View 1 (tube, rainbow over the protein chains, first blue to last red):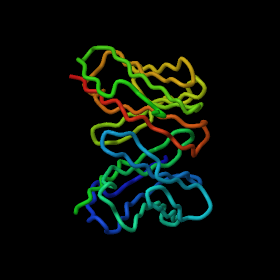
View 2: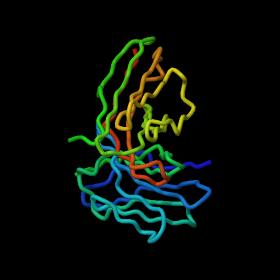
View 3: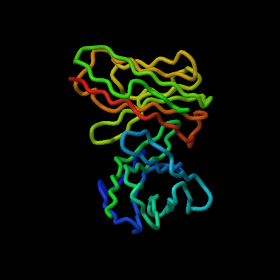
Length: 111
Length: 114
């Protein structure tokens, strides 16, 4: 069965430091993979998605993610975190029409 | 000029009541969804409609009944509300129903059942 695991429940990063959020997936075929961000009191916004092609995907707000088939991973990165990046981050895999989400990683940014 | 709007934003009600949450999208999308986010922030698909037809119906109590009067609207009616129904409910839409579509989410309805 398809599943998504985000091993880190909560991460705190200093403003200006680099960020990596981990995501592992389980999927039978080549997956569609997504990262969404949820700001407090808001709906989810797509940061980036991957299906095929270049395994390094660029997204909005300076985020990127790298697909590694051998590790079944799709980790999200940002070279320099801003205070406004504090939010909940969800990794998801496409399953037919719907998305299967991980349980999310809460990012806190300290000054 | 909200793309996916849902009302109300907050809903507080007593056990046993019946309530509805409305969702509208002005993106011209064919497919709409309801997702439930529990207290641990876990998001799970409940329903999906494509052009007013039900295409996904996950294991959800039949007290939950979606209604799509047209492809721009997908409302969620809940009968006999229970404490466990307390959650944030998100409406979303996508251009079509193919795998890999980008979803556009509403800002959520926080339902509290007392």
